[in-house]
Length: 164
View: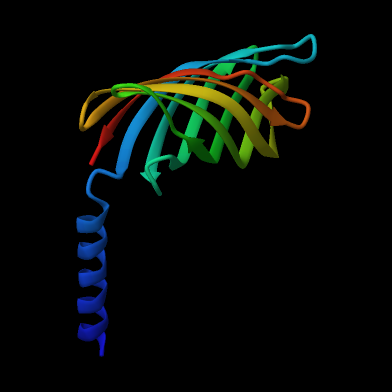
């Protein structure tokens, strides 16, 4: 029974990979995310990773995780599930509105070497542009509004994606 299940799983994974073709991608994001409220407004430098899957030619799903380096005693981490609606503008060039939901975590220094962590629901909306340099490699730019309670910010990101 165990061998049968393993064989079925291997066939399913193999057929999924063969069917998917060039519909998946992995990549990195770099950028900055200035906070837009309060007098204590850090701008975190962002380093992130992403996985993308094209459901159709126009709809792409993305799982992204970003780490915001410490600025003014505050660092961030978020994990987001985003949807991109890919609009072809020119040959190999796309614009896309995006929306997503996820998890945000803030880590703040509160004095005397004490650090406080806050878990928050997060969502974002924005716009992006992507240029496919080759069939397997693309670069992108995104501008978003990201909401986390008491910590709204405007991430501005550039990225690169390897597609397979």
